[in-house]
Amino acid sequence: MSKDRLSQIFELRREFISDLKSTIPESIPDTIDPTSKSGQQYLRDLALHGVEEMFEALQHLKNWKTHRQTDVGDGFDREEFLEEMVDAYNYFFALMINLGVTEDEFFEAFLKKHDIIIDRLKTGY
Image (cartoon, rainbow, N blue to C red; front, side):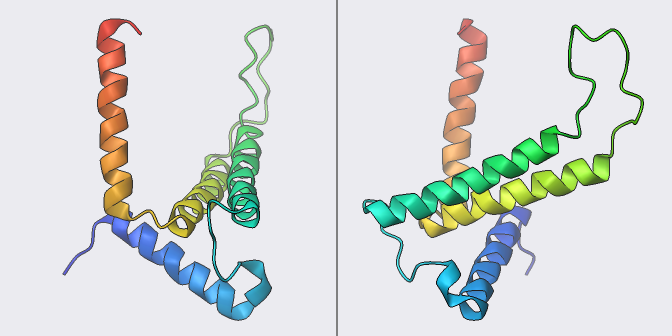
C-alpha cells in the first residue's frame, strides 16, 4: 500500500521526534500542554526555529533589492536554499505534530484557507 507524500512527511517527523526523545530525553517535554506556560514556550521555540531556518534560506537570495543597479554575481545555490527550506518545514511539521495535528486535519485546514485566499483574489481583497 502506497502512502501519500504528506502522510510520509508526518510519519518521518513522528519517527524523528520519537528517536530524539529516546536519544536526548531532555530535548522534548514529556507532555506538551498548549494551554500551559511551559507548553507555549516550547511550541513558540519550535516556531521560532522554523522562522530562523526560513531566514537562513532567504540569505541565499541576493538579487532582491529593487534599488540595486548591479546583480550580485555569485549566483543562486538552489540546493542550499532547498536544504534550509526543508529545515524550516521540519520545525513547522514538528510543531503541528506536537500539537496533535494530523495530516488529514492539516490538509483540511489547508483546503479551507486555500478557498478563502481564492475568494479574496476574486473579490479584490
